[in-house]
Image (cartoon, rainbow, N blue to C red; front, top):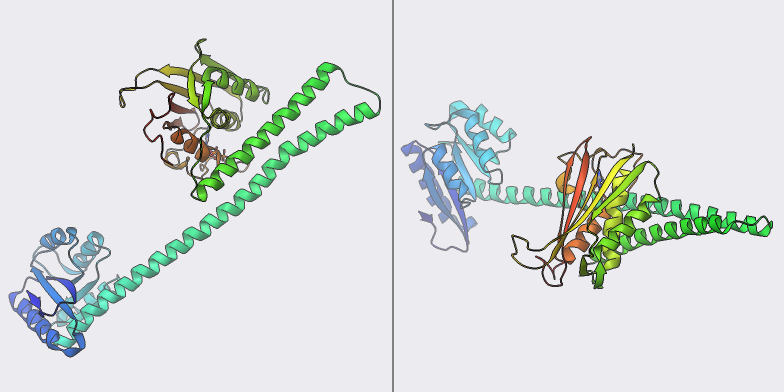
Length: 405
Ligand code: ADP
């Protein structure tokens, strides 16, 4: 039934009441209310059900703006009726209808979140209609306040994460910088004192300087990519023909030079796997995975890097693909963190204070792999180790999301 033919704004009311006499009373009261000029321009559309189970079904269709609820129904009694309803439809405002003898229960429902309660037999049309409109407005206002509070909390958390990241990045950039300065000062001291240095020694020191500058460059590039994505600009890949076997072998050799506690093993065919890829960015992906494998295996151990071609991918049915896997025997990643570790700034709960990091490497890696049309995945067992797998199309335009950001 629609109470009022002038329907600028329709409020859909679900009356949950099993007593036919009470249903008639409410109906009449609403008809009275509709005639009141105070509510001109709005209309109430009433649906009535007599059981909680039917009401729950009705609510699941999302076609109710407000509920009028009698707490004692054939299939549910007392405050439980209200609580079950709230659980099923937390966003729908509820006005409780009570008898004289269960007013205390209605007050409890208001404490639990009902917008209002009215005592049957004591409500006139105007009070009932006003209570319904008020309930809808108040619930909207509550939802808006909650939305603003959660947006504010999110913005604050992201600012905090950015501050922490900036602090970590400045610290992390300082580490290679300090070692570059130390090595340069050592060479200079030796030369100015005329002590000299053997060519082997000099080459070794200069090699370390080169490594440290490459590390700094990678960190800065990661940061620039992340900043570019945050600003909504897509990564522009600079594709070139590149042999992935050579790329992973070089990366593994670079990382092996930085650690004596770990043994890196490369498993690859001797035949080259040539693809049209952004070699510099892909090298960053491999280096990030390898340096993570080292960092998150503080006790050392074997790190395996596999690269192999995959001629036909079952899902896509065509194209040449390569699979690249990095496996370590380190601390692993707790199951609850796994779905989030590719998010920017996210770090798993088991990293502690000693293993520093920004939470940017994997986010950048995923971005680069997906921009190539490939995918990156992880499997891990805490305390046993972690494997990252990258699947990459070797020809431009083969991948799933080749052009998306
Ligand atoms: P971070 O600078 O923190 O290493 P990443 O984006 O590279 O940032 O990694 C995100 C998080 O994923 C890390 O903080 C760590 O919790 C987890 N993680 C990445 N690689 C590994 C790994 N090989 N073993 C265990 N945890 C890892």
